[in-house]
Image 1 (cartoon, one colour):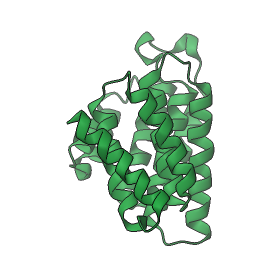
Image 2: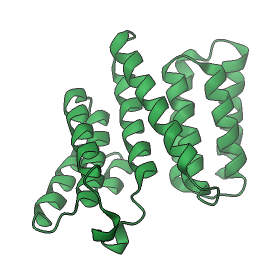
Image 3: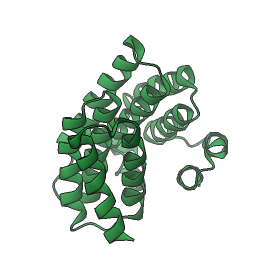
Amino acid sequence: MARQMSHLGHVDDAPDLVALAQYGARRHLSPATTSMLVALEARFQAILGRIDDSEAAADRALAAFDRVNPADEDPHMAFFDAAELQATLGMAHQIAARHLDKGTARTRHVRLSADLVGAALAARPDHRRRSRAFEHLGLARTHLAADDVDGAAEETTHCLQMLGTVRSRRVTDRLGELYAEAEPVAETAPERELRERIHNHLAAAG
């Protein structure tokens, strides 16, 4: 429900739903479940611009993941592996970067985002195509946050190639967010070309 609220634009409700999940399952929270929930909290706090709270949640998510023993986890938590955690926290850092003015703090969050999302992508098996498309898109947005239009264009190309075989409304919506994020810097031919390619894909998908 927290993910759905965020996807629908009701981000203020998302941290409360995560907190409710943590409270409701407080006697049965495994390290993996704790890590998953707190990683989501890090992302939602970043969206709300609460950078310190987001970083604190990210640290707690990593600490909980260090305690994971797969043999002790419920089968339904098998999906939450290191790549899933890295992707979630990488996006939290990317979102945090976009809230900050250019400077050392923004650069640090961009670097952490690129490292984490890149590690998640490297760990994903080839058949996880939607996850890989998400991660290429995440890297594109991270490059754009660093004003690296060439890097953003390269990762967008990988994402669009994957979307030829993957149908995902969530990925398409995130692509629309990248299109909007690229507008303020659409001053040169490469930047305009990047937005045009995204626009053409969105038009075809619609």
